[in-house]
Each structure stands twice: as C-alpha cells, then as structure tokens.
Image (cartoon, rainbow, N blue to C red; front, top):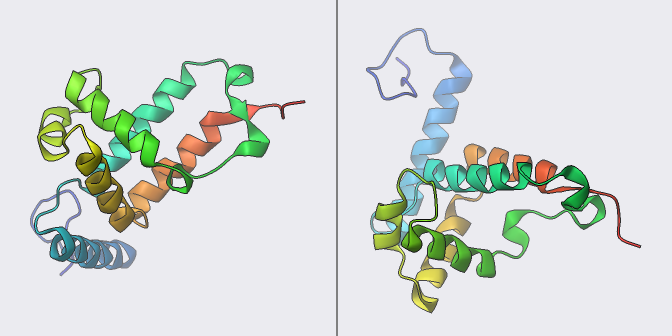
Length: 147
C-alpha cells in the first residue's frame, strides 16, 4: 500500500514514484525533527514563503527586475533576506497563512535569523523548496545585463 500524499488514508492506486517521494519526505522530515526537536518551518511553509516572494517580483515589470547574468539561488546569500522575512512575519505585512505561528517561532533578532537560516538549510533539498527557488530565480532575474 502506498501513502496518499494529501493526508488521506493509504491507497493501493498510488503511483510508485509517489511512494518513493513520500518515503524520501518522511526521511527528510525525520532528519529535520531530530536536528531541531520539532519542525519549526516545514518545507511547504518555506516554499510558500518563496512563492510569496515570487509574486512580489512578478508585480515588477521584467525590465526593472534584476539582471539575468546575476541570477543566484535564494540560498546563495540569504542571511539578510531571512531577517527581512522574519520582520514581515512579525509586522503582519506578510501574506503567509502561517505568519503568526512563524513569528512566534522565529524571534526578530540575531538568534531568530540564525535559527531560520539553520532550519531552511535542512530543507533546502526538498523538492517543493527547490521548485519554488527555481521559479523565484526565473521571475526575479529577467532584466538585461547592466552596462
């Protein structure tokens, strides 16, 4: 029997790849919980954060976004952005469905930033997170190179 990925009871019709994905997810989740006790931010919550960032960049005309030749992953240099994310959760400016829970989990100080940074490093290889990071890059970096 395979796991139903939307939280329902196990089904016999699930695709074999879905079963492998669910098993990999369970391993990643267990690894994350072992490292941090509970799982403060889930891959789905962080993917939603990246998707919100993508929507913000989509509202900017493509020619006014960052240059294509400067493209980088969110994870390449994210400590400052972690602080900005936490500030948005605390201010209520974020549209994230779990912003209040995340604001309680991550304090608006250096310790909160360090904790969020550590936690997202543990989930950065999650398929949902990787897909959201890729989409963010494709939207954020569309302008022509700077002179």
